[in-house]
Amino acid sequence: MLSIVLIRSISQMNKLLLTFTIFLVVTLVGFHWVYERNEPKFFTPFVEAVAPFFPSKGKAGGW
Image: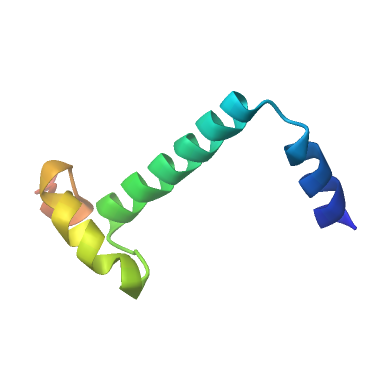
């Protein structure tokens, strides 16, 4: 029942706001995966390619 209410409210939401919200969530999850290196196995090749450009918990070196 909750999922039906959520789907109906999302379908009536402003598409620009919905796009920004999805982008923000995906970006935050992605940065978390790169920093913590706890991504799902099937995303490992993508995270391996992106990880050198961002800080990582393993490479912080005692900060």
